[in-house]
Image (cartoon, rainbow, N blue to C red; front, side, top):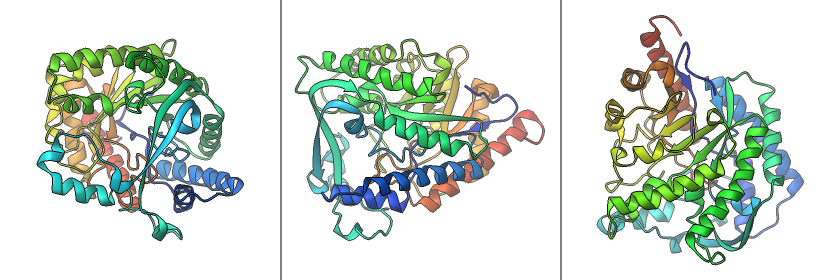
Length: 400
């Protein structure tokens, strides 16, 4: 895994807003209509090539394929695993079990009504799309099928041949976050969890063997802390979370730490976040994951102050911290000077060589969960790169 040896390197969390052509195909499928698969495959190859080119042009050092070939950061498993049955909900029937909903009920009702449609591009079938959530249930034995992954890795590899970047990563789900899909097949939740870990190991291994860094996305681990707050203690939450960390490390068996990135956030929604668990209460769990880099939300105004946690917490030997320098849930573009200041704060605590500039979360976790307009997305990434350059000049005392 590349390190910031002479300047602060830049990356992001993985998902980027898909092209209108890909989104048009996704809407067609969501409306229950057939898609020309050969035409879709062509649009996907073209889209991946373009998004990789744009990341390189913006100056991002460690790039992804934008997750263009996936329904979403968790729902993608419906195409790659046996044992899952689709549960597609109309948006108006979808609710979240979040403690905040009682306090901010009116807000959540309005927010949910447009979350899956707000930033969809103007494509021919948009008017007929009312918003859906792609969810699944485990109804049979879970096993991994690599065909779709092979397609995505081939598209990504081909796209990378035309650009110059430092490194490339592929985001995938962690067992804990996949476990949120309900189980009616395995006898116990723990049996289900470790079956998921064993199946995911095949995906993690295939990505690393193909020459990419694997990134594990695990938003549910911190989110579960506040979901449990009503009737569980923090001690009970830690016991629950430790089992999930054990499952993840089992899924990583045999994979070198420096080929692994671990990402957590507090949910990507643009919501109040008043019940988020503090980083200080879960950072010990996060650092137990056998990863070479830890990507943690840090620009969100509910968590920006938590850079101070690293005054008292030490990274594992050789590990890299990738704090979010830009926030995915606001269309305000952060000033490069602000990003530089944030990076200098972190560098003073963990060391400049142990730091990389990242983003809080993805810009489009699912194909229809677009967090901001793509023009703003690219402006933010360009600002991230410029902020890292400014910080590098300060930290190394010369032009980066």
